[in-house]
Image (cartoon, rainbow, N blue to C red; front, side, top):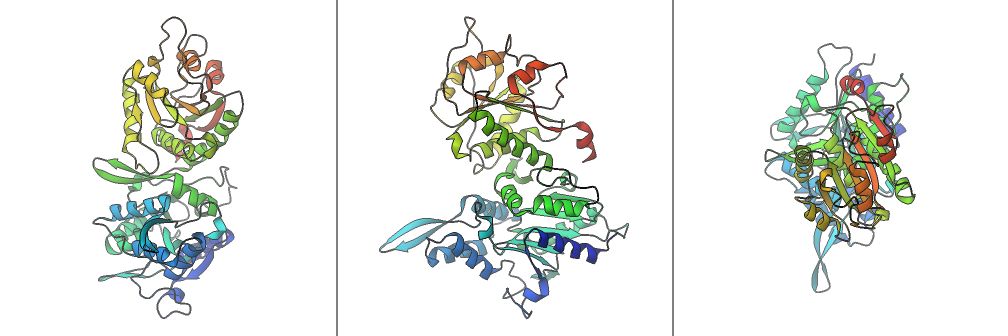
Length: 459
């Protein structure tokens, strides 16, 4: 079993294997052999940031880049959560600046990360990165930088010390948040590890909601890989970490407080596969994407949010309409409220169909939108449901897809198909489809991803 310093060294080697540059904190600090900071209170590596922004935004003048850097440096809001939320919005949408062109002031958007060309970004991991704020001096074990911005923090505990648990690592991070908050202004992912247990979360995740990351590119790793190696290679692969930041992290308003949610590995893997299957079904005549079966408590509503957010980013779908169906008013309200509570830069405002006529009206809008309805609104008045839209870029998401009323012969699926003949269907369920239940497969297609109760309880 590795000690803490050996664990730290191993972690750096795993980052190196992913193509990151590795630096020792004291070397890049003031007075070091290769200084990149003017003071210990400075957590952004400004030269790396400046060079990356110039590279990523080649058509923008230096004035725009300098103003974006100024906004990042002076990002602090009244609370850490508000500051972090402002940064996350900048990552997704770019930094809005006003510059002078001739005699005019014009608006420009400066991109912080290059999501298309990964090698256009600057990738660095630093151990023993000392930060001083006020009276406090603290040294997080490992800090992950993209373009000079500290987006990841890893806190390790000695695997050989039974008292050094991930709970202690969590408590230490909570102290850091109070004592050196600036290192978290830009943080997207926190990893805690004692090598035996490795769990991931965000700046607002309570300890009990930190969760393991158990796959690498959707596949289970060899058994000899430690949980920390799996988490680093599974989450911090260059393509994965940027996708997690853009598409699988969301701020949710809970009881008037913003909570930052990071997808679990089961949600990430399921949605990645669902997006692939969606495009296959959309391009074919089949129109059946499949079914995601994830056990109760596996975050199905949030999973739908991530799926819809990804769908809306696909140019080929050309501003799709998303119709989310449930079979009970309470479920309709529950999932609608989840969509309504999340940050608007991931998904637009949803609309809830109040009546059959309202549903018809919403579906006849020529493009876009997230619509909620109960299946019971698809009532056939004279044995057949009227045509609502011939558009192909309508994705129907059915909650609890295993239930008997979703069938082609006598159920609502027949009427939905009559109203939306070219729509593409996906089902979500927390209940396993019976082996003999062919109607669910007939409507939605085969399993896309399975995360059963045994796996959920283990995690």
